[in-house]
Length: 258
Image (cartoon, rainbow, N blue to C red; front, side, top):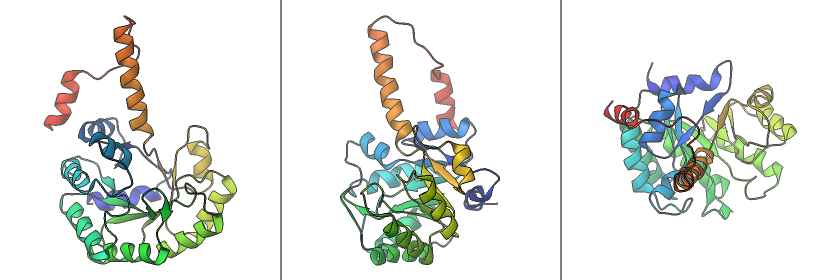
């Protein structure tokens, strides 16, 4: 099977796909080495690593550059492309064709714009349809940010059903945490539902019981890595013992040479 076939099948296994989100080649390679069957990217991590804001369509070049490197990994990779870096369906489809050409199996395509408002659902649906027409093999995870932007639950259901109709292979609703709302979504959808893991929310087992098929970490790992970097630096400065296992130079170098 191709990586895309493998990635698609991971949404229909005995357990939900636990998808960790990386921000550079090193973090993605370490996650693949740890045994995760697929890896995603976090747009916040990619943007922050480049010194650019997230969600403002500023990281098209950085996203494509990273995708070229991630295509070397032995596991399928899905890339967060924010809102597609354009409102033109043809341009978004062309960008996705470039991702497929370098070995990317899937994308996240969100309907929020500039972290402040939602796109017209028909306009966003046109992006989804254009991508599927151009590269039908690409797994398109259509994300709606209704919960993050405080839009009512009825709007969420209407949007995701429309995006599914437009050809989305998966649906991503970050911020949804109420079990009843999750069950409503999984019951209404044919496409697998993806939710964002929350340390204070439902467990993986509980989400599986609700019918969730994919659980992402989003920017959690990147933010945890920032905290660990500062904590480690402070421990060194304070003369404290370093706790936890830290990968050796040789380990990281070996991953980069594969």
